[in-house]
Image (cartoon, rainbow, N blue to C red):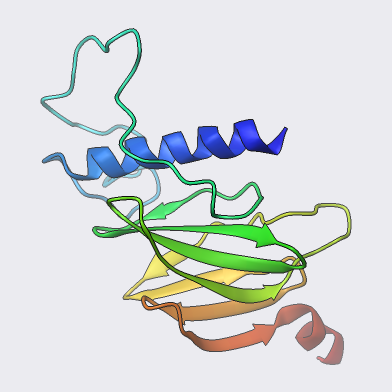
Length: 156
């Protein structure tokens, strides 16, 4: 059941990356530049081919999970679970994996598999593992800092 979802997710990523190359409005805000959910794009197709857009690339090497991808100008970031670990993977626009970093322990409780969508800001990527590790990484995949917020809240 996870494989069809993974393929669907990668198709969404590919479509997102392909639209990134079009000239259009850029927005880092939730729901667009005026936060209305309305994007005033131009030059979009009025009718799509029945087969949909062509597939540019896909990957089955991101682990298992339910996160969304974060797309920047040159990289697609996505989390996944591999074995007992949560990993962050970075892919270039050509679909080649640039790097993969283990950032914490995966959860085996009620919700197994990765669910953390990476947040990207000012060249840093922020993710949360299933066991509560809040992690900040650089664009090259090196962990800059990490704190386990569940352990921190127990001692506070």
